[in-house]
Each structure stands twice: as structure tokens, then as C-alpha cells.
Length: 299
Image (cartoon, rainbow, N blue to C red):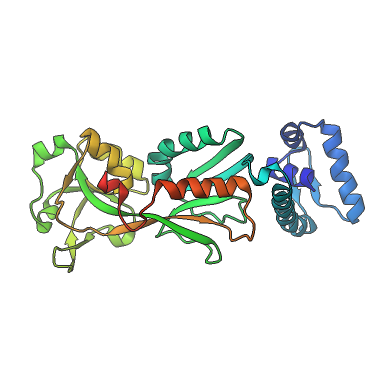
């Protein structure tokens, strides 16, 4: 079962053989023996690619769950129940992953040298169970399965920022209305194309008309263009923290509340967590002892 799952994961018998440290012949024989035992073909084989049969799809879905249960059972009955080890798969929202995980992961890795980290960073929302990911870090505009366990790590304020060079050349907005005369660097969400919803000091939401100098679906591009002096940008505090501290960006209209997003750690609801998952959950939770505040803005 493990060999079959690894062949599918790697997309080839040779890739599975390398990952499992077996010969190609052994991997091929094990899958053939499994198919003979089941009395059905699990994989369609051509000279160029492999694909799952209908039976293979159904079997793989159950096999992944069974193997996870076996791993959990073995972890409880062995030293793994107290010593984290093995491959830990992590997903993170793109901005948080690039700006915050490089600070967090080295400290975790030093404490748990037997754990290998496999990290996926993307703006695409993933299905933790289907993608076989142990732990995900999401922001609250992303959707995840309600059956998962979710722990808030903190809230991140949305900040209006620009480079010192831009401020010298164009000045800084002094009121919400002043934003309309500035070049804005904007995410390509339709609802943000022409206005930015901003919460005034009295709590009223004001839709400020904007001039979008640049529209993109990539926050890194917007950040680099803002640092280069192209215009003003809205950044969550967890992505702006280092740029503000280094002086690459300055915060504009600090008295205005542009809104906030929650940062949430999510993992499948299992009765018994493996030691590697529990160790990471405990480590990350300890880094964010006050989930109701913005730790990045406070710093």
C-alpha cells in the first residue's frame, strides 16, 4: 500500500523506487502483486506516464487514510509518541510564509532535528486532507474545512504604506480624501479596483476613490514597486513589519483603521495527533501567546 501510494505521489515507478530506497524491479513487483491480490488494475501504464484507473482512485483515497492511521498508531506505541520525527508537511499563505516562516522554522528545526519540513507557500487555498498536509497557516479570507481544528495566532492590521522617496516627491496624504490624488498599487480584486474601504476614526466605513497605477494578483510585486517609489500600497502588518523597521516603507495615516485580517493555524481534527504535528502546534502556539492582538504591529 505504501509503495502504491508513493508511485502515485512521485508519478513514476523510478521516482518511488528512489524515494523508498528500493530497486525499480521491487517497486514494480509490489504494485503488480497488490493488483493481483485485489483482482483489478490500479494504474494505467504507458511509456510516458502513469494514471489512476477508476478503481485506483477509489483505492488510493482509502489507502492514504489507512496509512495515516497506521502512522498515528505506531507513533503512540513507539518512541515517536515522545520524540517527533519524520516528514512534516506544512502549508502557509504566501505573504505569511515568505515574511514570517524564515524566522520561525530555524528555531523549530533546531529543537526537533529528527523532523524534516516540507513547506508549501501559495496564495491558492489547499485542502489539507486531500493534499496530505499536516498543518496549514491561513488568513481569514481563505476558506478551509469547518471540521478542522483552527487556532488564531494573531490579528494583522492593514497598513497604508509608501517609500520615503515617494513621500518626498509626492507628499503624504493627511486625510482619507487625500488618497484619491495619489498613485495606488492595488490587488486585482474587482471590489478594490476603484475604491478602498477605510474605517474612519469614528468607526464609519468610507469608500475612498482611488487611482490604481498598478494592479496585480501578487503581493510581492506590489511590495517591491512600493519600495521603488511607484505609489502607496495597503499591506498587512505581518508582511510590512521588516520594511517599516528598516525604513524601506513608512506608515501613512496611522490614526486610520483600514481593517484587519486574522492569521489562523489549521490542522485536521484527529483524536490522536502524531508527535511531529503536536510539537509544531505547541511551538507555534508558544510564539503567539496573545492571539487577540497584532504582534507584528506591536513589535
